Length: 610
Image 1 (cartoon, helix red, strand yellow):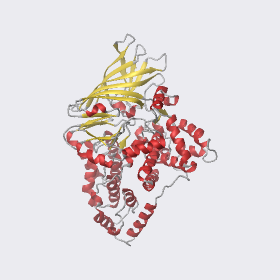
Image 2 (tube, rainbow, N blue to C red; image 1 turned 90 degrees about the vertical axis):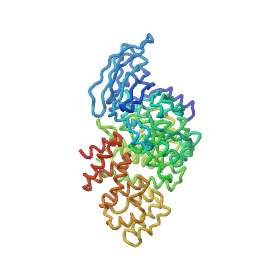
Image 3 (tube, rainbow, N blue to C red; image 1 turned 30 degrees about the vertical axis):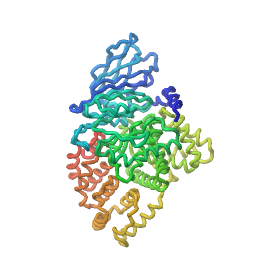
Image 4 (tube, one colour; image 1 turned 135 degrees about the vertical axis):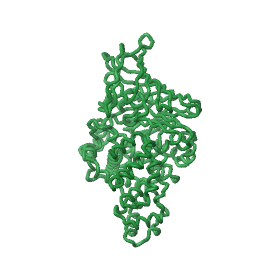
């Protein structure tokens, strides 16, 4: 997207759709919208707190309103000030309501006049759900502490008072003070972060939803990969990350040609400690990445393609509420796969489609039917519950279905125009359905009906004619599984020399769930799977081994669960251990590892043992 298009989008402000009612926010958007924030905080590693103030620039929508309502969770509010018409700061009355388990505590600020600037002095608390504090011993270099934010879905309110809803967007500036030997970075222009002086200043000129305001601070070094990309990481993983992800510029260049020019300036990566609960987080200009994808062979770089794809779907065009999450993640999963096809070839892209589709079909059997709809109804539940294979892979399959029906040439034009039309805006599913009908379905009649599109979006499960991606490579793996399980060949005779990690994952995931112990031993002896250094392959092997009673894995499984905090790679293992009568062993490991996990992972796993 060209710069003049970006500025035009910003000047348009918030569309009517962007004010969609968000059941997970207290914000009174019909009365007033925060259009810019200035954050000025100091990091206190010893107390595990942020302390300072946040200043909101306000756009009043209701001439009769005099109250600003913000979202908070576990924050201590010291005082609130507003800048009056006399250009002086005045005290404002405020009330912090009782904490709701999901939404947190409503902060109501009474103003004597419709002030343009309101400043809240506050501090976060150690239990902030959107922050993880790590001691030096919990980091790779073990020299400096580390802290990072994870604000999606509604955790920004745990470390700053804000209108915490994706229905609105803000620009921001920030000042973060740290100990002298700690570097801070943000989802913003990080040029000031190149100089480690304990006083860092940031600017984010493009409007983003609050959940994308993010920071990290620790023993971080910096290394460029291209004119537009770089890595921030602890020194121990910096060079490996650069080598792993040096195709990032090629990904950007390919996506520019498909969907319009990258709108955010730089695209850098922050490598987080292993405790990071997700694979990645698409914070604009600075994606947060788990070290578990540094495999040494670029086998897991589709994660980078996914976070980059969010620069168009999610960051540029955003779901208005968390019930519309599929608009972020379905489009992103689709664009991710298109990027992988452009950079690494069609065969790899189809293998990844097939693995994801198989995972979705397995998860469909474990999720309540109403929760398998794309347009999810949370009914007051925590929006973290919206994250499953449904918005990601069912959403992706819906878009693959549309591509197959209309042809890639037509569908690419539609997707590019969709990103252009809603750039720097938020929309709900109902508005998307109207746009889809007008600009694709009705424009090319007789191909896909509106009822069929609505079946995908509003009905549970998968339509009968949903795509079923298949790979010739996996057909060959199926043949090898059959030969080996029947005893026609030995494990060491399997033709694995040129297998990709995708073929390995398919092989392990499609072995019988009641495989004999002697077959497990044979396979492990041949390929040392228990000691695999590829986190995804190790996870698949451990899942198979726990269910089959292969006890040789437990020392390695203990290390896996203790060293990694990525929920995808640990939560299913805890569930499988409990299901297979290993609850006490699992609980002992968890008790030891819990303090190294992010609060989001802690909350999920705590519930398993309650």
